[in-house]
Length: 269
Image (tube, rainbow, N blue to C red; front, side):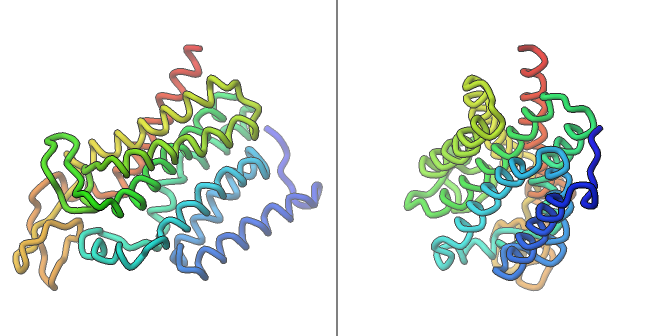
């Protein structure tokens, strides 16, 4: 375990200041709620403890790209507000669902120095980025998506539905993080390929879980299928999944699956 002290190493003050400023900026531009900004500080500190500015750079690449894409053609995405449980401002639960595993990997690397946690760290961010890019770009597809498990047409933004545009964006999102990870952490190029593939696989797991176990409600007033428990001022009835199995849990589990797979491959090879 390495020493972490802002007093003994003043450069840590710069790192902590950077984390705080980014979190505040995310709150000011309405990419994060206040609780989301606090959670971002927490995850950022753990990642910085393990990986320093390299870790913050990779985390920042995910956060910046996802924030920009969430604002891109926002007017065309407003129709999704009636379908999705939460808006484009990430709260603490969303931040931890997407960044919790990578922050734990940072802490464990700080404690042990084992490179297995670097594989987990990079892969978990690749999976989160893949899912975010797929969601933000896929919803802009001109063609209606299809449910992955049944191939039936679905409304844009439906959890479990895929489109060619969204799938390409998912692959690009995972590859983006993989390409940054190789030079940042001096990884073997083969691991760069694996990070991209496993990250994309995390998005695939997200799609399967979202289309099978994630809860969906039917509004008794307008008949809409939505992730919102309450719609049109009344409580909806569950038509799919389990009430506790929301999008945040789907995100956390899918990233966890990708992280576990990367750890298993690291041990094998």
